[in-house]
Every structure is written in structure tokens, then in C-alpha cells.
Image (tube, rainbow, N blue to C red; front, top):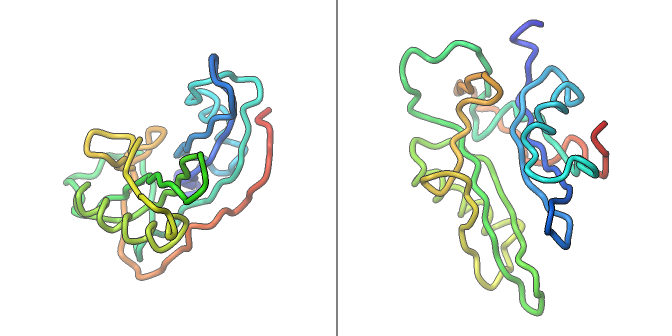
Length: 177
């Protein structure tokens, strides 16, 4: 396998878990040459029941905020100033009982900066009309997930100016084999 052929995928998965009354969802960052190659890692990372585990959508992340994403098995010699972050938000809409969620990925120099950048993006998009937007389940100590090591691959960034919209390469319902 050629290391340069590996891709970083952001995957939205669904399934069930013991004691849950409704379908549950989570995100996973996985590395592989194809989406199908990542299925074992997705299964391994799922906290719930294996039966019924499925893909709802995924995107191959190659650029974020003008930075090209590169993967390497070698640790960087020095810490990067800019890092990739995932931030998840929740909000409530008028006359709706359920809490809605939206998330984004950003390049920032700190978790605090990542949260500010992400809030600006999310408040203009999926949760724009929410009555109340709050941060929750942000996946890490500093309320956001730094995506710097995935499946034994270090995520490095190179500024090249190219941007990629955070839209799915595929969406639907695909049970994992």
C-alpha cells in the first residue's frame, strides 16, 4: 500500500445500542485508500450494537480552510501551529421537541480559536434559525476534537489556498458488511 494513496474520511454513522429507544448517530474519522477499506475501523470504533450499523454519509476530506490535508505515518518533527479541529453544536428550533445538531471542521491554532471559527460557520448554516445554540458533546477536553492522529496516521496541513465545501461525497443508507 502506498502511503500517499491514503485518504482521510469523515463518516456519519448510525445504529443502535443497548437501552436506546431510537437510532443513534456518531461521527468517525478514518483513513483508507477507499471508503470500503475503512469498514473494519468503523465497526471497531462503534460503541453500540454491531447489527444494524450503517453509513448515513461520508466525505473525503482533502482541504479545509485553504489547507491541504496530508497523511503520514511519521510523527512531525515539531508541533504544527495550525491544526485540524472538529466541532459539534446543538440547538433548538421553535415548536420542535428534539435537539438538532450541526458540525464543521476548521483549521485553527488553538481549541479556543477553533470554537470561535466553527460557531461563526454553524450559526450561518444548519442552525442559523435555532432559538438557542449551545456547545455540547464536543468530544475532547477543550470542547473540541483535534484531528491530528487517525488510524496511526498523522494529519498535517499545507497552506495552498484551495477550499472544499463540507458536503457529502455520498449520503443514504448503507449497512456495513
